[in-house]
Image 1 (cartoon, rainbow, N blue to C red):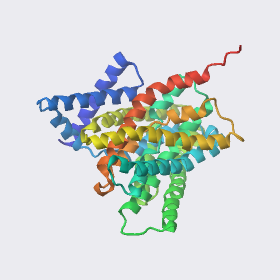
Image 2 (image 1 turned 90 degrees about the horizontal axis):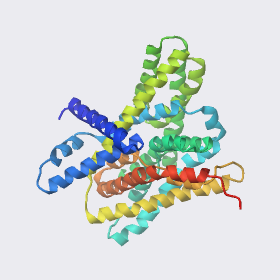
Image 3 (image 1 turned 180 degrees about the vertical axis):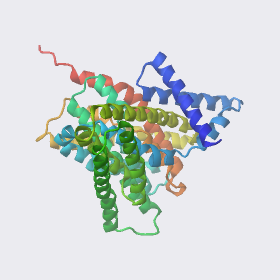
Image 4 (image 1 turned 60 degrees about the vertical axis):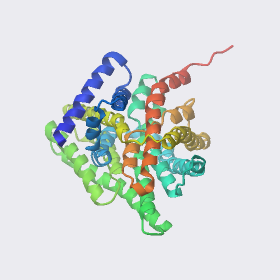
Length: 415
């Protein structure tokens, strides 16, 4: 199946599922699209089991899509830039301490908590895993995905400060999580011992290089935008910034995700105020909102279809089910610890720990990183565990977070 036909099928599926969800299910679009895609996949697998050769064609479609490459080298930069474009830098700066702690120390803590728990529990399931492979799972499952939950938080009336914490954390922990994953992958597949100094240097180059590159690329685009007043050209400049900048960051071996977040914040704040006319701002926002919606629709349809590549071994499925509470507990500890400490100096909304724990959804980036693993890193097992956590977080946590937020907002009764 050629690329054009594959894209056409995916877009048609996304459009059909979006219509069904809007007309009948009436749940958040990204959650609805993934649910319908997953249900379609499971129905096709069942029909195949009863002798109808229908799942074969869907399997061919999924096998022809390199999900990891499509997301990590294509969609991710666009999605992160679009998300950062609408984040208020003043709100972000006011909570820079909390966001920095959650996006760095929180990711590292979650990585080791999940990795340690999986390593300790694997022998009870009759599996021998290397500790570094368990850490790889911890690293890829730690970044959170705000796409579905932020819209729900807004509708539920969540405090603005809590929205900013979740949005800021998720924008930056994607980049940090990818860097941690790549460092661990080099250790897992490298020829021998990797020194702590080498790991620190690699981490520093990726993160600091990504920040610096994002500032430089964003500033160049800012100067170009401020020198003209033509919204078609200005929209094209921002698109070139993302696609060209992400590709160049990848070639320079620095963090493209972090670079795009920094560039998006610069263009979305200083660029919006100082370099664009009201007409340009309106058209730029419309363009990037549309890009964001279309890519998210395709992404969540793809996540639902990826069930075709899973191993349905009983041992792996059990590991996937057990991974769900492990990841949730690690999230609770990696969020709760910093909140309890920072509460002495910084304000937090009621039930902030509960909402941030339950609202820490996992999404496409976790699946993409799992798919990028080589077979010698227990790819099949890690992919199954990752998929179980992602599906649970989006369908169960995503659909119930609104009730949690509303209960936190209810005034306490006075007797």
